[in-house]
Image (cartoon, rainbow, N blue to C red; front, side, top):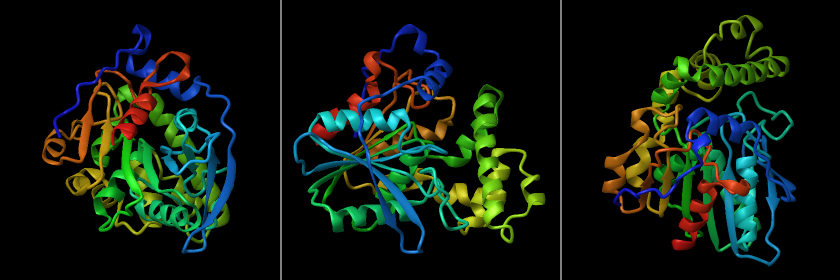
Length: 319
């Protein structure tokens, strides 16, 4: 499809990508979303927790929301999207990846940027247990990559899935990893690494035979984490093998349902490969919008209703 000309015009102070990213991640508040938790048992015996919120009216429409790295269903970008969809007479389910719902998952493995098989299981659970005829997928950062990979690699997408929106997505994982190791992203790098090291220490506690304290001490960078844990726990040779096989960029040509990719041009997490102009122009189902501003999941607008959420609803309603 032709590239979409973005209409996003943020207030002056949020044109700075770091202000937009940090404010949205640390200070934004979304209130009034009442969630009900449901646990899904996966085929390998592990579990994922789903947090549901509902429209005031009975609805046949559902939006499935996937969070980013070390996020959860209560992140305000998740709640903001759920709230707007509920107000538009649709139900929402905020998915917690394995180990992200406040309780350790039961396996040594957890989740990663390419874990489309877990999304497939969640979707199948919804199709088997619920009565939705119109299902939409909405992912942020890592969660967006999972959605795009799922849509592009799954041979038979269920007919109930009508469309998707992916926001601030590192569709080229190696490129984004390199960006996160640059000086401009040092604060995010430190924060992510600390969260991931905490995860490794918990995994060591429950699986000492799989992960030693000595190995954990070797983790000095985010790539080290992917070499030491992500790749080994999920069947990849090393970090680079994980990045190559899990990047959604290679799957974009195969997407067969209307899908919007919203990546800000000033997103400091994204490399040049994360703006797939050629792929979007060649695939009639892939819509690419590249606002000048927005940082990483930081599309600030007044009243805590973000541009990314309004665009998601507009896109879904236009399908």
